[in-house]
Image 1 (tube, rainbow, N blue to C red):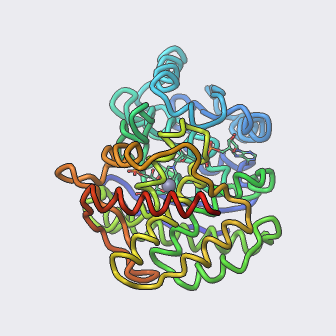
Image 2: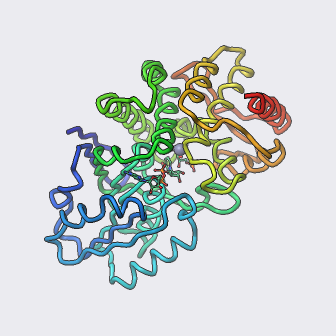
Length: 358
Ligand SMILES: NC(=O)c1ccc[n+]([C@@H]2O[C@H](COP(=O)([O-])OP(=O)(O)OC[C@H]3O[C@@H](n4cnc5c(N)ncnc54)[C@H](O)[C@@H]3O)[C@@H](O)[C@H]2O)c1
Ligand SMILES: O=C(O)C(=O)C[C@@H](O)[C@H](O)[C@H](O)COP(=O)(O)O
Ligand SMILES: [Zn+2]
């Protein structure tokens, strides 16, 4: 069992990390909630919803809803439908939402909780590797056709309950996607973690290594969000790889690339740009080889630099219409750098050419 606490401006919440904790929700959820509304997706529902409901069986009012799996559920339509269900089930300000699933469920259900009757409690119950990142820090959001996570809030959960046993059922694609965020955390804060992960073949990672990587990743995430809850400064470093990553997700259509796959490409780009800007030699080839070895999709088909630049202009880090990217001076030493459109376009063209040759 591991537990970390996160201090925020409005609460202090625990992150419980434990195998099979899904059978013990009753021990962590107050009996005083007037109703509990579990939000999950169709895949997770088939695997784990009954376990969680059973563990809450002594509570008189437990409702659930199942959304379609995938990024397209982070939509205004899904958000509205959940609000309707919350009203119809009679949730009030003393009710609780449990987000049982990956980052999609967490971001969506968290945003519903943040806005239902101006805000009710919610618990993040992550079931993907990627959600070690998304469940911590209180960023909740849905997408807009014009950009990722453009409608959202900072709204911390009352607890994170992470049953890492559920990770055993993840398909290879989702293991890859989740590891991209661990690599991100390593690159911005922990060279040793980066070197450790670069030794791994993802279809052979042991449970002990997976637990260790996730725990180190969560510690890094916790550090940045505690220091800078509302992203006025260093929290932006957690966006390493996301300026291009988010642009690719929206340009290709949500769900075409997973979030982690897009961030992986975005990190290669950010490392290339870092090397050009700081004339240094980050191990971009080490990362590229590792991504290839682990079958990350690294092809950029039918994409052009103008469209990507225009997508990057709706990134939340944009300031006075200038794109700001997180770059690395070295591993563990990130900086936020403003770039002009011409330079970005040039970097993008070089990068797209290089990716085509892969
Ligand atoms: N809020 C944040 O700080 C933050 C951080 C990182 C990412 N995100 C967001 O998180 C989202 C991506 O999250 P994700 O990668 O978890 O995607 P996801 O929630 O779509 O889950 C990926 C897939 O795995 C399935 N799945 C979930 N748990 C499973 C399990 N235990 N076994 C088998 N299948 C399972 C899901 O049904 C889905 O098909 C993106 O929208 C991204 O923007 C948010
Ligand atoms: O917690 C953060 O801060 C992050 O940037 C974590 C990212 O992995 C995550 O994808 C986040 O949702 C991106 O935030 P956004 O503000 O760029 O939408
Ligand atoms: Zn991310």
